[in-house]
Structure formats: C-alpha cells, structure tokens
Image (cartoon, rainbow over all chains, first blue to last red; front, top):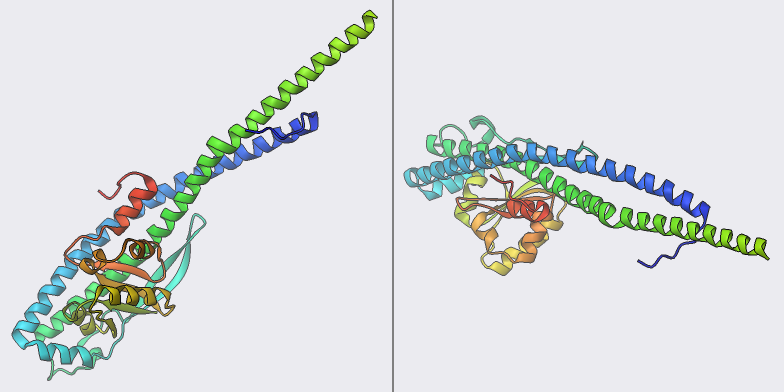
Length: 205
Length: 99
C-alpha cells in the first residue's frame, strides 16, 4: 500500500478515531449479517415446505383435470374454462425484515364457489368443478410460494452485499488503517529520536 | 396485479379453469424468451407461472434475470424440479442449504 499520509500527531489521533468507528461499523454489519442469515434459515425451511405443498397440489390438479378431460371430453372443459367469471388477482405490498424491504403478496378471488364461477349448476360437471377447485388450491399455493421466493431472493441479495462489506472491512479497510497507524507511530518515534540526537549533538558543541 | 401463465395449451387449461385469463402459448424458444422479457417489464404482472421444463430451456442470461426478479416473481412449477433458487443460494452463500 502506498502510504500517502502525513506523519503527524493530529493525523494519528484522527486515524485512531476512524479505526474505532470502522470497527464499530464492522461489528454492527456482522451482527446484521448474522441476523439476516438467521431470518433466511427460518424462512428457507418454510419455503421448502411451501415448494413440497406446491408440487403435491400441482400433481393433484393435473390428475383432476386429466380425469375431467377424459370423462367429460376436452371441449366441455375448454368451454367451461372460457366461461369462468372470477379472476384471481394479487396485490403486492411491502414489509420490512431487518431493514430489508420485502414484498408481501396477498391474493383476491383465489378460490371461488360454483355460484361465483358463473357457469351454472346445470351446464357444469362435478369432475370439471373438482378440477377447478384443485387449480384454485394450486393458485393459493403459488401465491404463497411466490411471496416466499421473492422474500428469500431479497434477503439473499442483502446477505451477499452485507457479507461483501464485512469482508472488505475485515480484510482491506481495517488492516490498511492499522498499517497507516503503525507507520505514523514509527515515523513519530523516529522523529523524536532524531530530535533527541540533534539536541545531544547541539549540547556537546 | 395479475397472474400470468406461460406454457402449452394443456399446461394453461387448468389455470384458465381457475379464472386466470392472461395466458401465453409461445411455440418456439425464441418466442418464449421474448414473452418472458416483455412480461418482466410489465408492471401489471405480479406472478408469472412457467412450466419447469420450459424454464430449463431458457438461456443462462434470462434465467439469471428471472432469478433476480422480485416483481414480477417467476415461479416454475411442474413435475421436474426447479433449481433456480437453490442455485442462487449456493452461489450467494457458498453452501447448499436446500436440504
């Protein structure tokens, strides 16, 4: 490192203060990183569970729609799908986890009753209704999994950047500042020795 | 915000039955990539649901964009396992915590 610093007492005092501040910041960042990691691990377990639920409901949904298509025929299923009146929608708001703004996804009209679907009781079929119910359940699980996935991605990005900052402080910034501090201390001691030597020589003359 | 489903007619039919109206049926890989790119820029889209097998065929660059996108969130479902989040965790933390 090129030490472009003035070896003065005031610089040394400033540097000592800056080292202390940086070390405090380093400790705080380290705590933030650990806290985020803890939060992440807790959410990850839920995410794995949500993924498993999603997969099982997807399998159920495929099974029910295949059954409906094979019993009622593809055309009635398609025509019922076109006639469905309810539209599932999602609302994305924000919440805060340890200073990280994460999305909170809430769904509207994710599941609906036969009456709400607007296809009528006479024209419909029990198999098609079952398939519609299975897919409504799937959409509910999708919304849940999507929220968790987005939250995990945000936390992951924050953990990564905090980790980089912690590493930069630990392995680059603080060691460089300490090196500068040692340089100033040694230089000042040397200057003091030079001064004493000069005075001694002056006295001897 | 809306839920969008991308995939074959067989894949999207069930979602249509649950009331999802924004369905895309790209026939080629290129069309699929441009559809996803357009939807990623669309502010009215909250969730994009894609078949995992289609997701696996996308370019590395687009898959990275998908992995980073929060609104909309792209969710791969299917009988094939979706490993995009698992890979992101591995590359960010250095360990595979998905166990």
